[in-house]
Length: 296
Image (cartoon, rainbow, N blue to C red; front, side, top):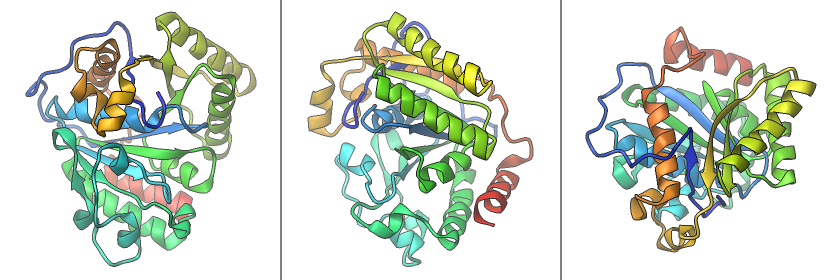
């Protein structure tokens, strides 16, 4: 899926979309998940949007953070026009509560800013402000999904470090695989991240998704001594451009498409699984450790 595309990742066979009211409010600590990629244009943003929408349909409270600093796109993808964004928060003019806007399905979105160079490299003070505000907001959420920028720049590493779980998005293109390997390598070797889940986007069929995963996993296993998890594939869908034009979530417009069923399967897995390697000390201690490591 491309930036304007939303195709679905499946953890197995596709299922029907979840219906409103399915699932209960989780009693667990908020799960902080980053959705990242080494290469742009692989559909990371639309995967984030649709996972958030589907999880909200299962009665989960969702906060989506647009962490593509300086090149925000979640609001554009959904046809939203926020008057306040993260730039105003980090500049001290507004609170994060004032910056949040509501998206499809009742998801809450924290929009970033576009065309502001200062946002491309956050200062220590801005990082402290951001983490403190996020810690306060996340208390009322089940999932905090962070849509990072692509690549291995400082802000990308920072937001991936601030996540308890990392989902890497890649396609079958050789450059996408090379860049996915690069971001995994940096996070593993320089930031001690050991768990990565892979979504293969724009797959022709389930077999291609599995083959792409196997190629990347062989590389990480051989050169990094690291096994990555296969989380699912995303089927290519020709109806996606229509959702892009309408600035709507793909799964809302075409809930019964093969791609939407795949995304529903993935969202169900996130909703019902027991998180592995979560933060035993709770979200407060988690944020404190991130502040010490990244802002000290």
